[in-house]
Image (cartoon, rainbow, N blue to C red):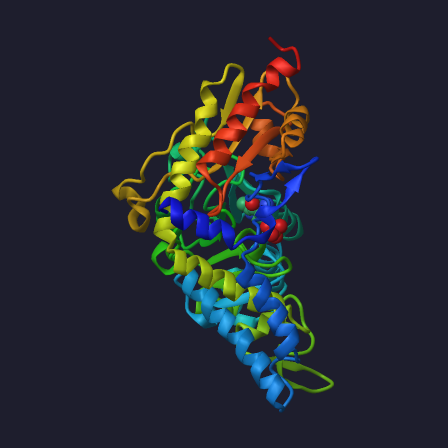
Length: 444
Ligand code: PMP
């Protein structure tokens, strides 16, 4: 963005104008947890309640038609942001629920629901589910549960010292001591984050998807930390399923999306059943509506979905290439904290560019502007508190990724993360405040 463009972007976010802690200018560096919302998203949601509120897909009155139109238009807006077709977007309450929908749907298929069409989702003893050591608990625990309920085995791609996935054991014959590679004939599903919410590292999606395809395994991409920050084309990435959350993507809380390839959504059994997802119901049995409605039982989060649509349009108007370029500058500025004595970054310490092997992602940055770090001899919570006293909001803790923190032998990190509205000036303010942290605690 030009400086003038960035000023205009910031002016769109009312919350960024406020002060905290006795009049200090707010420096919001917690966008990986949740982003702030532009006025157009707030207005769209209010306008829905003021002008269009009605039950969707039902009533035969004018208002119900308008509400339905707004709801379905939002689906198109969100689909357009991620290169999907409108019928491939299922509304969910968030990414977590989208992953649970797929994992539990597989369990239902295993129980015989969905008939022969759902056979490809069946999983049992001897089968393998592959995740990574870098996953958010949202993309780990549902798979642990699926393994526990079906007798399948959970395996994972380890993380190297640089915070990137270690793919050396991925393929057949590379698992060591007679073991099959991590992706092998028994692998039924590979679930992994596009971008880690801790390290900011971008996963080699093309490489993992190619290996999964070779053995017929399903791929599930957790795109929570990529969709808000870079161009994402789910068709080009060729994944089977993907999830992301509105609230990290400049949109409202309470809504997210599950992307699924059309034929897979048709075959996957629904988990939540009830009103709105049916075609014919008798006392004995029910036929389900086609996807995406099949997965949208009960009254949906209509106003939030409509707000999400506005957020998707807002990002598309900014241009995701411009967003990625702006945030790469911020990432580079954030990573200058590596030169502060006693500060160690968990994850890649510089931003590179993905090469030809990244296929559709070639030329895009290989990490995003989410930087987790530790300060020697100072607990992450104390780091967070000193920064907070200066009006700087970062996140501290394990960021719902305990195994990844255990991998690095640390209980907690502090994380500074940026979004479209973050300025270089804010990052400099953060860095200067961080410079004083060890001195403050008498660590040097
Ligand atoms: N995956 C990743 C990588 C995330 O960062 C998050 C949110 N912290 C989630 C999944 C879960 O998203 P939600 O809480 O919105 O369902």
